[in-house]
Image (cartoon, rainbow, N blue to C red; front, top):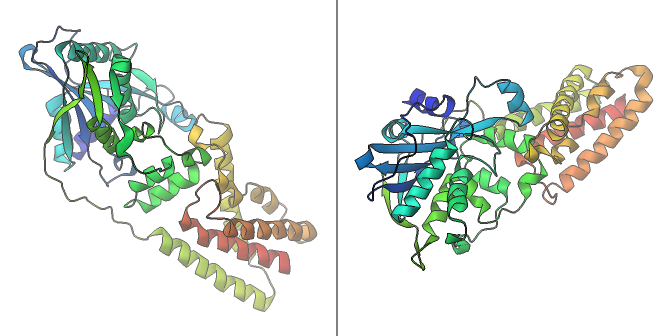
Length: 387
């Protein structure tokens, strides 16, 4: 069933589509929330969709804003540049549901308390949005994704006739902290996201913005009201769980980042002590260490300046992943010793200041990286002393 789930996200709509129909009085609209999965990083946040059900017209559709097509022109280039287009796909609800149930994912249905005219308005909007000329949208990780688009459908259709009560949100998480909540079982994925995405992720999220996550979208609708006949009523009539909570499949990792970076720091310390005793630098090790971090720094600069990934801007990880390392390594030879000693003395200072200010920076740097920064500090120090 995992392959079936992937098909939902990758291929164009397979479910039957009708032209806009006049729904019957018994037609219903529901919010579908699919629980997180831990097999892959992109599954860890869950998923949201809208269901429209009208048995008299033979309609039972899942409207899914989480669809992208590998075959779209320049797919990988657009993905890298932050220009990837997602689209609204429409599926037979039973196919959509079975894909998630087959993977053991929790699925909730919030059945909404809408009048026939309100139900028709949502259906008309979705059908119009699903037309080929309207179905694509510019995806953003946090502000325009499959969950926030569901919220926005209702906000656009009903305007001031819907309101979300945010009093149930008692935390003041940043976007990064909200993301971290879902990646506790994905330490490498969490680390990769924290390296690649910069200061914009450390913005305090408003309760309305919390709904970029499906769980918070569900709770947001649980605390939302809609205006009917001059009276505000709860928009959620009832919630139906399709399956009981399932045990999560935790991905097996050969080595945890703490162990990997801790082990690397231990090797670096041992090599540094060895170099001090023999008064000679292990250049091969420094070329690899500073070369790799320099490449990471260049990639971060590219994400920051050459793409439309807004969340990758102003990335403080550049303080340890110095792109200048690559250029300095190009002149790593004896005749440049004086310059190199000065350069790596500056690197020592940067690393010391970075470690001391780690928990006070405006951007939350990942704690797993502390051993790596310590390793850079030790090697920069040995170069400044022995070169």
